[in-house]
Length: 215
Ligand code: ZN
Ligand code: ZN
Image 1 (cartoon, rainbow, N blue to C red):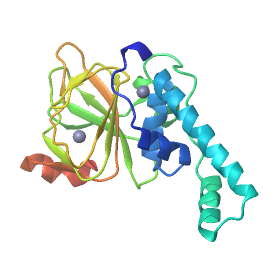
Image 2: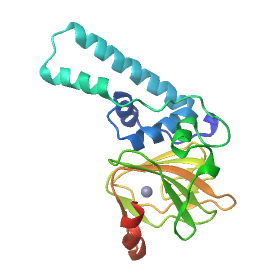
Image 3: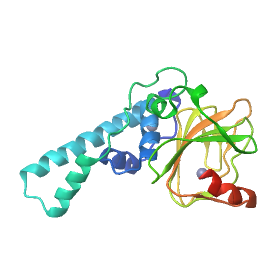
Image 4: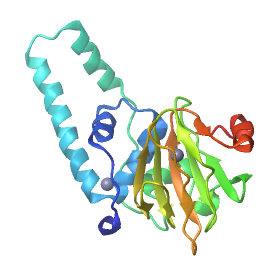
């Protein structure tokens, strides 16, 4: 798995994940990528030990009220999903299994049109995590982003204006990017996607359907 991964997490996402300051939906998606990716697991390890050293170091010096608060926040941070073991079986990374309640056959898909299906996962509402099923050769409608969108490929592959994304790859999209992800011909594509704001669809139909789909 690790050898084929070309698209990784950014340092700022790994750092925020290590500090425990991200919404649950992002934590889940990041944990799933890290469980598949030796490179990001190593980088995360470095941020974790750096964060630990900062917390330890700060105990010996006098702290301002603000930094004490920051440390308390960190101690209260929600438990991270376990990043290992890499795969239980099949294609669902271990951190995701708990949210699905098993492997892919346990997913309750809902159609969102044009053959594309989604399953929203139970996370806190400050961000949304969903599984997306894109049939081979089909597209997710052209859209932009109001916040951050993380898309992790679990199975199959897709291409958009940025590049080609295969199993284990993660795409980090933000306000600057408009794209139309299209699944490769030959295999259905299944992704885990996390967003912290509604997408900006160009087409009227997706815009009308949007509130019902929480996308
Ligand atoms: Zn990676
Ligand atoms: Zn997008």
